[in-house]
Length: 219
Image 1 (cartoon, rainbow, N blue to C red):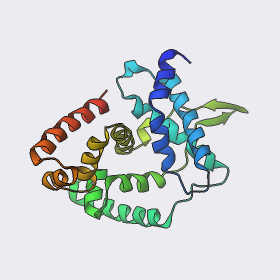
Image 2 (image 1 turned 90 degrees about the vertical axis):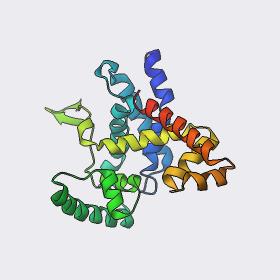
Image 3 (image 1 turned 60 degrees about the vertical axis):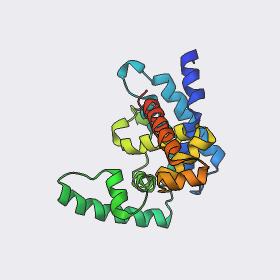
Image 4 (image 1 turned 180 degrees about the vertical axis):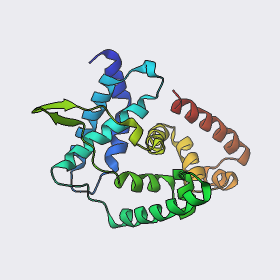
């Protein structure tokens, strides 16, 4: 690997952890999930072309998930919990209703609002319903690497995983602020009391953090 490829792998191991956690409890040890995900990350780093003007996470997440899914190929389909299956059924019904009303496919966030849950749970249920993807195929008795089908993955899923990785690297207070405001549904005043800050301080800090997150996501 080149120095640049090695740097991409080292700086994005958090993506592997985020992807591997999606499959915990489905019959395969976390270490094995993580190892396979790392193989996908290495492949992505080796094949990434920065001149294509896309984020590395957009290119890498499908490769990481593809390698993890290969673990389940010999044992059949990925085992999905009942709660995720039930949510998947609700999503399909909601999609049909909202498609008729909107005249287009609803976004992950719109589905989350409709079903009263968070976008990450919606993304996980949608992703769990997808067929297992193999990165190889056989032609004339020889095995070939397939092109990674980036377009088949919901961009929202990739963004959620990338965002979680970036948030995990924030300072403790900043991370808590974002969790309270955007995952805990707290107002700025309520968050300020819990963090020992004023509402004005929370407002200023929040704007700075959001700007930082946007810059990281658009690199």
